[in-house]
Each structure stands twice: as C-alpha cells, then as structure tokens.
Image (cartoon, rainbow, N blue to C red):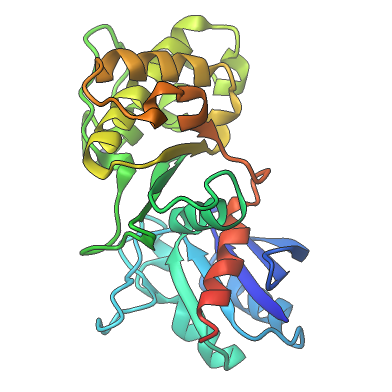
Length: 289
Ligand code: ZN
C-alpha cells in the first residue's frame, strides 16, 4: 500500500512515496517558486504512482478548519505568490484522491510520535529553530489545532538587557522568532550560526531564549517530551546549555519523573531530518478512512 507525502516549505517542496509503516520508498525535492511553476511539478511527480491518499504538511499560516470556506488554503503568508492559495483543492482536483492537511510542524511531531523518539507518548512538542521558528503540538493524543493552529515561534519571551541585537519579527519586538531564529543570530552577530560555533556568548544567549520558551510551553501544555529540530539545533552544544537554563528557570516548581532526567526530556529530532516527510506519510495514512 503506497501513500503520497508532501512537505511543503517556503524554499523547497519535498515529495515522497511511503508505505503503511511510514518507510520512505522514494523522495525528491522541488524548489518552491510560484504556485504556477511549482504545483504542476508536484502533480507530475505523484501522477501514475498509484498512491491511495496524499498527506500534506505545509508551511503557514494555513486554514485547517474543515467547515471554513477557505479550508486547505495557505492564508496570510508573507510569501506573496502563495497567499490565499488553495493548495488542497489544487491537489485534489488534479489527483482525485483524498488529501490530508496539517502544518509542517504538526507533521514533524506526528512523525516523531509515530515513528521516532516520542513513540507511545500522548503529549509532546516539536519545535523547529531555523530561518524561522515554529512548533507542532500533540495534546492528549491529538494534534492541536484550536482556533487556527499554535504559533509557538511568536510567544513573547522578553529581550535580555544585555542583548545588543533587535528583533527580526515584523510584528513583535520580543518574540522567540524575532530574537532567536537563524536570521536573528545572523543579524545580531554579523555571521551565520555555523560560522559562530566557537563563540560561547552566541550560544549562551541563544540557549537562554530557547529555555525561556520551553519553560513556558512546559507550564502551559505539559508535554511529556520536547523535541528540538531545524538548522540552528544542529549546533549540538546548545542542548546541555538549554537543559541547564531550563532547570534554573523552572526552579523546581514542577517535579515529575520526566523533569528529573532532562537529557531524555529535551532532545534532538530523531529521524535524520525526515520527521516532516514521515509525518506527511502518516497524515496520508490517516486520510485513508
Ligand atoms: Zn513574532
């Protein structure tokens, strides 16, 4: 049984075929330019592949409310060519199969819960820290959508007094994405994160901001595990720094067996950057009902 998977990102579209066990059988990457150019290539890839359903894990904001007139649309994205684009409708019309739809980061947490390091858990968070910051939430065994979908990258964390940088978020002067995304690091220090590996000051501040956010997620969503992915988190020296600061900021308020072992609580993504596309396979499997 084969399923189609699309991880729709702002710079590239990953298309894949997976089986009912989430195994990726083949995979390709298509540059994201405009819907007119990119969508025909995606459709071409899936045509003739005999997939039962398609799962789409998409950059946002997107409309996930099935009773809404714009369900399946990419909505107010700053990527103007994709603004108000009906991506689910376009794929359904062309492929004539059921299409499951969720956020890219919900795809990643679904991938980790189904096939990765969060297997068997009912409550977990996946946070991607790269060019931007976003997070997917599994709560009580269901992907959290709510009114729209969570936007974990834009919680207010407060700018530290000694931080000489400024927020790169056009909406907020002290949100997590504004102060801790890859773009923010580059703007503050004048170099990309990968070129700053040995600069301890960079990672001390970065870990401080991330730990503040994680404490807030822990207190509000009560996850059993927090998974950190994305380009910035390839700086593995961040993990011990984040765990130590998380412990300090939590200040012993919550005492659970999970928080006794932060090495197992705050962890890197476990599926070799395939968590998103594997989650999209699971979205397709769940759409086959
Ligand atoms: Zn913001």
